[in-house]
Amino acid sequence: MRKGMALALTLLAVGPAVLAGPRLVVDPEVYDFGTVAEGLMVEAVFTLTNAGDAPLEFSRQPATSCGCTSAPLPKSVLAPGESMELVAYFDSTNFGGRQIRKYVYVYTNDPTGERRTLAIVGYVRDAAPYESSASTLHAGFYILIDLRTPEEYARGHLLGAINIPFPALTSWLDRLPKRLTIYFYDATGQQAAQATQMLRDQGFYAVQAVAGGLLGWWYAMGDAFIVWAEGVEPTPPPGEPYYGGNTVKPQELANSYQVILDLRAPEAFAAGHFPGAVNLSLQEVPDWAQALPSSGTGRLYIWVVDEDGTVACQAAQWLRGSGYPHARCVIGGLHQWEIRYGELALWPEG
Image 1: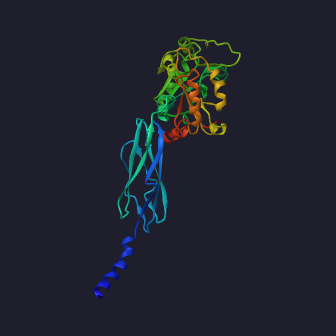
Image 2 (image 1 turned 90 degrees about the vertical axis):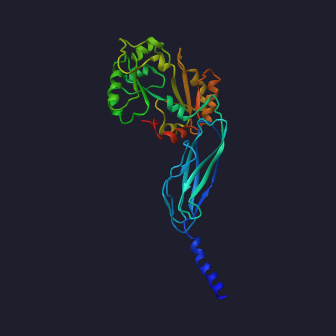
Image 3 (image 1 turned 60 degrees about the vertical axis):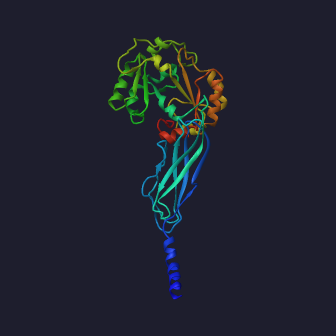
């Protein structure tokens, strides 16, 4: 009897110690993202909490069930009672029409189980013709730079081009992104060829000059995609076109010509936007579309962006029904660009 009582007392004494230690609690353990269009990058947020009385250590970074999912940990140890968010990213590209169940594996020193399995579930629908992903925009994205004087630029310039006069170009080197395509043009192609070589020497390998400059463009495309100032008679610049250096043919650029329409509030636009983007409200889109220059034999891709894609996709649908078959909205809005590429090519005013 005494031995039984002694054993019971011993178990009571060690029981709390056995049950003590780190404890991982996850909310939720299954993240249901509902239904999304193919191309969206899903953000699945899990809250990890140490509900124990000892430090919870994460022995390694989480693993995932496929390469399409990433889930980096912000820290490797949680004190008792401490929480942190684990954000897992699932890229829905190429998963259209499928029910999804992907897994994130979290590894800790929790004595009840060293590996915890979390799930990301939902349905990926096929994207509509007017919807496309931020990664698709990135794949064809370019910055078009007019190297002429502000006065020449104001008379007439290519749609979506920004004006950086050639003498000021060196002061822009830290701002121009090395990872994106940049096209230069001037009146005849001479300065554009020099600018292209200068940037290539600085490590900008995706830089090209428009062959022949604006004059070469005129010979190849007429005044397609040229925005003229009111009252200005469309005429080519004087001189002879120069076709040397690393160039892109006007016809090639015109066949995949882009313009970006940003429907966010002016304050948000000023805080950061794509170079050459046009900032309008949804109500202003019809008048803007009516005033677009002729595309000639070219092909115009209108990318419409906003914060989350809602208003942009309305505009893209309208544009497609109004004679612009290559209008697209960015699924999920500019937030999706920022998830994938950060602030790349999102420039503040000034």
